[in-house]
Length: 138
Image (cartoon, rainbow, N blue to C red; front, side, top):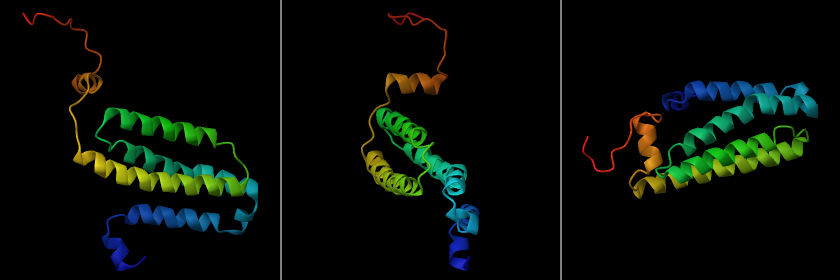
């Protein structure tokens, strides 16, 4: 790792990534069953977390929830895939989706709107038991 990459602040993530890459490039990586288990256990999980974290950056509630739901569904759907070619295709598509979400979250932050009722309830503590007074006499 060079000095420039260490100064970027992602050195811990880069070290984990390099460690995972070295694990996959070992002689065991040629076996499809071992490779798919390694992908699901390591790289997919990191990419999954990145997608979820980036999806939380959307300013609009509906987009945040859609990104979370779509990411979960896609990874659950492809969790049992054993074919290395299909795994590679899925991971490539997931990386493209991550880049798309990064761009879209930046754009969405330029055009923020008011919070929805659902978001306000979550910000206040979600499960309040107080009764709402329609006339505001409380």
